[in-house]
Length: 286
Image (cartoon, rainbow, N blue to C red; front, side, top):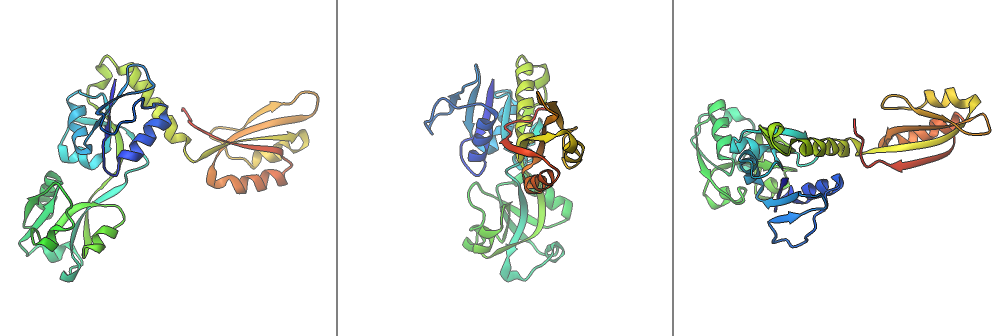
C-alpha cells in the first residue's frame, strides 16, 4: 500500500506528523528519498509535490494521499475525500493592490485586468462565474510579487494569515474558495485488493483525529457521593463506573475535552471525588 505525502511546502510537516500519530513510522530519514518504507508491513510513503497527489491517487499509483482540497479541485481529479483533516486550512482569494482603493468585487467588473495565479482552472471558473473580464497569467512560483514586477495587475492565490499579501501591498477583496487538507483515495478503492487494509487505516486515522484535544479522567468516589459526581461529568455515552473491593466506593472514568478539564475537576472535587488521575488519549475509535 502506498500513501502519497507532500515532499515540500506548508502541508509537508503537518502531513508527516499526522501519519506518525496514526502509528506509521518512516524507516528512512533521507530528504532525497522518494519512496520510504514504514513500520507498517508492505506500506510505503511516496514523497511527491502536493499538487501532483490528486492525479497520482486518481491513477492508482498510490492508494491514499494527503493533500489540500484546493489542489484536488484544480486538478479536476476523480478522487474521493475520505478523511477531513484538522490542518491546512486556508483560503484562495482574489487580491488587488491596496493603492487601487477598491473594496468590493463589483469595482472590478468594468476593468480589463491581468491576474497571476497557479490555480489556473479554479481562477478560470471563478472569473466566468463572477463575470469578470480578466486575462490569466499562469505561474508556478510566488504570486505576490507579480503586480510589483508589472507581470500582472492582481492575483488569485492561497492566503493563510494575510501577512504576505500586506507585505507586498495587496489586499484580498473576495474569497474564491475555502480549503483544508484531506486524506483522499481513488473512486474505486473499495473494490481494490488493499480495500480491507485501507478501511482499517482510515478507521485508525479517524480515531486519531477524534482523540485530539481529549483527556481520560479517573477518580475514586464514595458511595454516598456517586450520584452527585456522575451528574457533574460529561461523557461520550455515559461515565464508566466500577465497584472497588472491600468498601462502599467506586472508580469512575470518563472522557472530556481538554479545555473543560479545570471546570470538571472543580465540580467533581466539590462533589466528593478523590484521587483524580488525568491521562492523554491517543485515539478514540467510534
